[in-house]
Length: 327
Image (cartoon, rainbow, N blue to C red):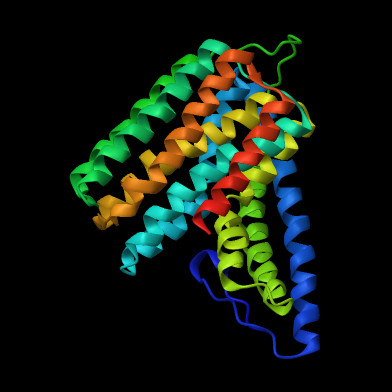
């Protein structure tokens, strides 16, 4: 049964037979299992790497985990730009950043209150707010040029440099460190986790879209829910599993790092490949939601030292309002 991957294809083939639909349900279950397993592998591997190299879990969350889980967004935006679909290239990043903060951190905080290390994460939240402001200014003139792309990539390099310097030399709270030598198990686990997240998310999005159509759910609702959240499934799986395992640094750092990479890395690299024309609505409407969600996260974290469960409920309510608004 043909089943194109949703990240590069917006209309998966609808199965014509009961057997085809049964296969679709099976793919849904397989995708979910791979997604969860990928998140578990990624969190375990990244935590071990942080211990072995005296790197803070937050740094690992901001870099390896945050950037790795943004792979689907990168694939979509580059393909869209090359195919002459700038709306998808930009909308993918903007929508993903909104869902990362409101949906993913909201769910994660409901599972376990997220403790946010003050000074270190404030620096990274500052980068996220700065990236949001910079790209908003770039969108005002109607396109993101190659010069803009260079500026964004330079911002990414600056972020990585500052994060690495600040996150090095970290000792685990229990004083126990790990040494790997020739043991590459944590690296294999991390790599396998990233691959599993991408494959699982693709299978899950395509099969869920087909199942939704079988139940008569409208294209608009499918687009606003299943497909819109599809490229954020790796971040969702990783942060939720990290919250369950009480690795709150990784859960939060994953979202912050992903949002910074989405703007500086994905839009920057995409613009270098092909300048991106931007519809007026992005600067006039959608960026307000990105800015409000990012600023709201910073304010709540400052006031409470993290994200308590009640803040998680508030973030989820805001995401529901966003979906209703754009619908």
